[in-house]
Image (cartoon, rainbow, N blue to C red; front, side, top):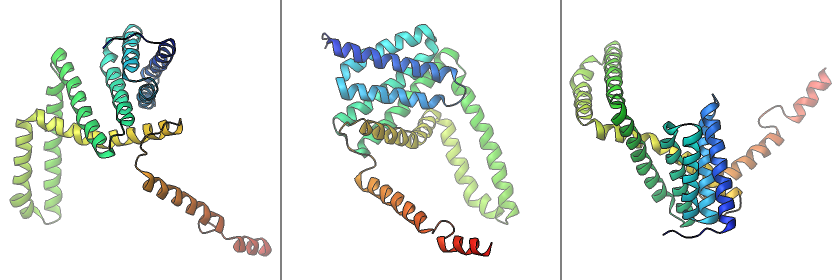
Length: 256
């Protein structure tokens, strides 16, 4: 399992680990745009896996965690570990040419599971995370249910709301609050679907821009569609379809 790293592997691993630490510092101290630098951390470890393999990326992750823990404190370590693990996973998936659907399903499932584990860890130490989440959800549920009932009554749908929709919504909400771990994980899973898709699309674009031969996402057909759309928009702009035509400009100048 353990092996001796070469000089170039040590140099690249240390350099990219330092870059990840800098991105985490920017994420911690900048008031706006911190999540952008977290995305750059994922791209850093994806590139490192594609260049030098998983072992070098794991060693760089250990260095990053150590430096972040010393400089910023241990409270940042779970999110740094989550970002590094996501980058390593994307690098492995691109290196082994995973299908897009399989990669997204694995990314969403394990991403939601990891974030749920972080919430559980914070709840274990504080004892207030899940209690506060459930309390807020119950309040929001009560407010939304009252507003929907009021709107249905104003629209003349009060009987339909009370007889068909309200019992169904109440039954689903009762089950969700009774089985709140499953409900919270399901909400996290739904939330991670667009998040993982955007992260994968941006990472795939950046990696391909750097010259690595990976499977393009969302695919060659979609990329050709966007390129053709951009070409047609430029062509229409030159023809004056999005603004005043050249003849109209000459007529306005002549009238002036």
